[in-house]
Image (cartoon, rainbow, N blue to C red; front, side):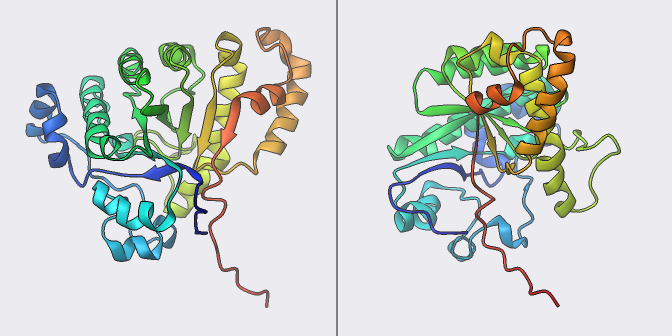
Length: 298
């Protein structure tokens, strides 16, 4: 990956606890009971460790990746690249339990772990609020609890969801994010129960990576616009992280075309969908800027 220029703001820097044991001190009693029962916890890696795109060579040489501690983050990234500011993301809970109460306990623990272990130790660092996707009211409570302090600057959601994120069942999350003036960031991947296509799950990580950006992310954009989320919350912004963006032009061409014919079904969408996307959506450049060696044509 290309070197970060000094003074840049990095919007997606991963950190992760090495195991559920590391966050037990931040976990509510209900979570302890759940874990003692042998249920799934944190520590399941989303990126194959042998995959070249999962980390820079210097990160591999420097220890764990994503970094487990502030010291590792500082040695691998903060000191060498000197960013102006960094937004930390932790996607460990994306593959957590479908139990909404345990998920709420785990996401609370992750948020507290990130604040104490990272944010409180470096003024350049900002956090992403991880929330229980199966418990929208609990998610709204977490956003209200952490959103006013301004050390957490976005709401982090997995791009794979049980229903599209524009669905009315998630209105509590939309409203809390808007109320606290925080963007929602949809990040690649999600729970094991969320098949990326109607025909099931992928056979390889290669396919899975493409499903996230080429199939699932466009559906989320369609849902958020067509369900009227931005008409209801005009100040809300959405970021697409690790989901590419070259697919947007063709999607928006068709989205605008069909809106002209079918707008009566969604009268709350008062303008062309492409205008909503231009105003309300942003995307991270990673992994678009990854240096890939392309073999010469034979």
